Length: 271
Image (cartoon, rainbow, N blue to C red):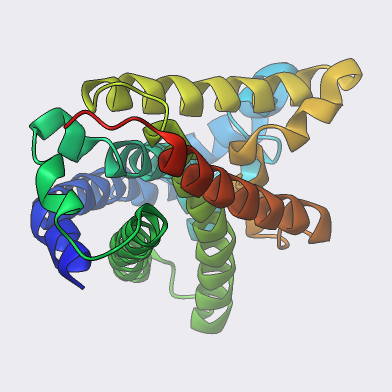
């Protein structure tokens, strides 16, 4: 319980900061949605986008450009960038979880606690999972509010909430997997200062891999490597990720959680 409280105390400000940035981004971009209903924008979406190369549309997940004229379709386009930011956050807090005390020189305090290294990692995982869940729930609440503000009167509330819940549940599971990968990174890096660069590199790297899998059929198998590819909002609004991706995510969460425990037990800590 002490570890749990410490994690919350040290991270609640960053959670609020990340939530604030996410809400600001969503608000600013969704505020543009009413202009999409104008005749000029409708013409651009229906004619200009359709004339663009398919590969370009795939890169920006605009295969169905007309969906930008609907509130959920437009939200999905905006939210894909929010999801990338959320993925970075998930990897980042995981990558910092087991190294920050060593970097801060407070590892002696953890050693003084009556628990094994395995238990320590377990408490850290639970605490950071709760922190990530809090961030995701807050994001969901504000996303729902923002959509309700800018939706058309003809949009059905039931459909909106069903799609939104489906999107957040699927993408939330991906964030948990990324958190697990971040924990593994935390056992092999030498300083918490390396966590930010590692999180950015990993997330953008997997994002690029996902794009490549869409552009070339010969490397389409790469889509199974890119976790971000599982969570494309435009796809998840239509249907859930499917059993294949779900099983892969469960395996990733399990394997990297166990690897984190194993590696941390073997690690020589800097006292």
